[in-house]
Length: 296
Image 1 (cartoon, rainbow, N blue to C red):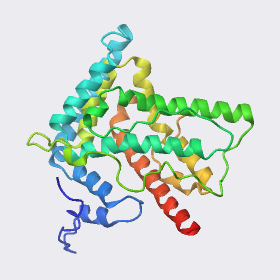
Image 2 (tube, rainbow, N blue to C red):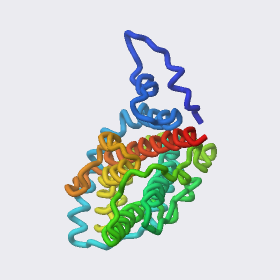
Image 3 (tube, one colour):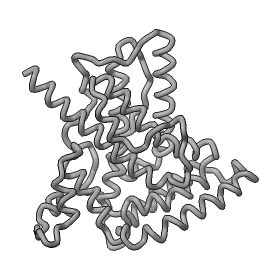
Image 4 (cartoon, one colour):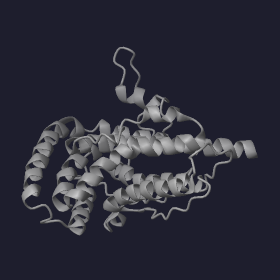
């Protein structure tokens, strides 16, 4: 597997500067070098350069065709088990190891962000179902669908309690960062498949999987999966109010959940969703270290 210093080793020519080196060295987002490297490994891949422009319009056309089909037979051919098995098979045999690493990280990060909000609002008790897959096999058990259910269930349960108990989300002087992982997640990164056919970047893979989501999920499940992405802004606001700094919200691109976007944009927005989650988590990691240093 490529080490995360690969982009640092790129030559710098002022007459022909590498965009990948510039993005790797840039510190405008609080991302770690391993995450940046994984994102840039996918962004600079040949599959993203040559396959994605072909796959994306085909995927959108398929979604539109299946949308019409779902009107006639809304809940036929649905199977979350088949969907997850199919996704697992595709990830195992065709997706780049760095792409699979980003996917596995995302579930750990999503779980920790929800835990952070729940733990730092005094007076609320929110049942949670953390998702922490260590390898690709850990994704088979309905993890993708459960990830979407977790965020909507969290928003509903949290706001019911806030309303019933008359609680506001406010800045907390001493935040609980116990659930925020500062070091590597418990992911078997070295065990991720890295064979000749593992060439697909994560964004192209997402575009391929989105029509499969629509095919094998009910209309309600697919709509929820697509529009859960716009809750990036909602979760960012919750965290920002607890921290006492709303500036992070400006980094979120999946916004305005009260005005849902078309499901045709789900593939690209899922990449933005991953970046927003990584950025928010990295911010909390830095705040955790800062608070620990102040208390030492």
